[in-house]
Amino acid sequence: MEVPTLLSHRSGLGQLLMTEIKELARPLVIPVTGHLDTDATEWSRAIEVVLTNRLAAFEHARRVKKELANILSWDFAVHSLLNAIGALQARRPRPSDIGTGRLTQTTVTSTALRRQIANRSVVIRQRACETLLRSPVRWGPSLFSSTRKVANVCEVLLALDDDVAKQHIEELKEPISWLLKQQRQGGFPSLSRDLVTTHCTALGALACAQVAKWPLPDELRASTMDASRRAAEACLRMAGDRGWGTWGNGGIRIQPTIWALRALALHPTEFDEELFRRFEQLRVMHSIGEPGCFGFKPGTERHLSPTASFLILCADLDGIGYAPASEERYYLERYNAAQFLASAGGASEWQSEVELYYVDPEYVGFIGNVEQLSWFHVSAPLALEALARHPDLTAQSEAMQGWVLKALGILKQCDPDSGMFQDRKFAEAGLTEPVFPTAYICIALRAFEQWIACFDKVPLHVEPPLPEYENLTIRKVGAAIVRDGKLLLVRKFGTGQLIMPGGGVERGEDVGHALRRELEEELGVKTIQVDPQPIDVYRAPAAFERGLEVEITLYRTETDETPVPLGEIEEVIWFSRNHPRDILSPIIRDHIYPDLLSRGLL
Image (tube, rainbow, N blue to C red; front, side, top):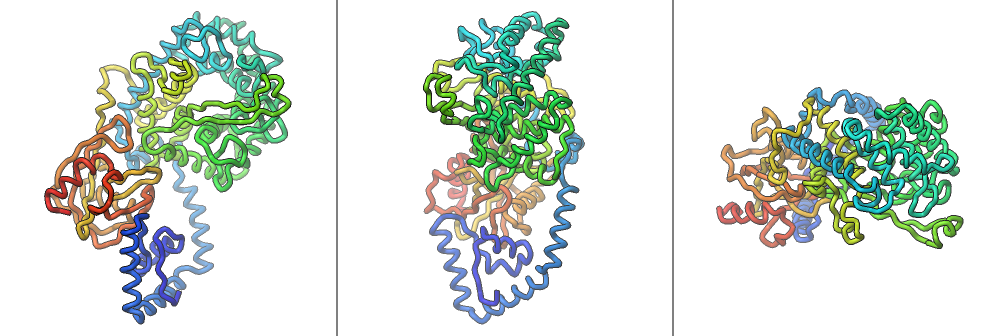
């Protein structure tokens, strides 16, 4: 690099230079915002400096080359790789860290907010279980369906926790007995098609194993245990060479494969060799370049539902002593999956997914000459359960703030009185009280509550009355950095609105230290001057956390350094009056920016 070269801060070489020789790299690495006028100005200025000071530019290039030669050698690369491998093991968060204080210092979501959401979760889940138990027919697609479905019965049985089941054991004997009568040579049928399916068989195995723990009469309990084992055997018989499809081995799909493996994991002493072999097979079916992230079919674009189901399966296997051939590879897969789930769907909620698939010709006759079917996946509860069962994978990153708050999005979709899931798409289909998403939400909320209780080491409660969670407030400090009448704003990955740089103040931390920490993590800025008195305190509905209010205490801040997007920040913008205001978050658009203009700060 003896020739003067300008680089984007998003390029790999630009990031390398800023990491290894930051001061020398500053004139060469140019921030890119994605806005043509801003970027053109920055690059024109940098090119002008090179052309008007050519000798100095060539001398600077020689200094950069010499400094890199001293730092980056093959010996350095080998030592760095070995150190990174050792550090990965050393810094990996463990499940035993939860609640010890070693993780809580790096989290963003406050303890009070976590507990308010989790306590609300207890209320919603209890009400949903009570409503489900009042169903006239236990259970069909809707609360008031006239006929039962095997899958719906299994899902509700899985949703009921042990305490609720003990209180209603007499009422539950009848649907449990009905379920056992539906078993056909070990498998369970989808009554919609009157055909044994992988999904229903696996659900039956899981539900029967669950109810076998309840205080049932000895004969009924023994029957449920035997039914679970026979269903797992049926799943194994239905397997193809590469996994499972909807009706067994035809048209391999990820979701049925994962559910079948979960059924086998219930009986590890009988199926462990085949289970672990099949799981290793599943792990190579990931989307290209994304170990641990799955599509609905092997090797296709990643989706929430199969990726979440994979993490749930991993939690099941961890409980029975699964030992991967490569622990580092296995950790990478789970970490990738958790980070994808935590950041997916924006900052407010996970979106449901529709899986479309074509029916294998050999099954068309069985299901009425239908060539294409669809399955509606309510992805949010699967994602929440997966992350709650793997808190060590997100607890040391800002991702935890996102998925904990997205639990609030799930609660907002539940009727506050009945606890039942409410959704326009279901209502349009005539399912005003849909059973299966409500059941999966109960399963997910139970896992979420268990994680919160473990994390904070305080049991959850219902009384005294909880504050309305619509009025919860996220409190932050923001940095007002102004240059040439332009305000520095940032945009996070996966979002469309600009927000203030800054963040939360940790316990025992002063404002200045909090802003320095946040600006270094988000923008690579280390040296700042913060006015001791805030400009003002602003409040508005949060941009991404639906149902919450955000409060920003804004401080005038100065720095001579060039901010670059790091971590969860995708874009840095020097916002001017020429930019459209619809790209601003509500609190900036309606309060902060007009106030700064009126004060003459812009």
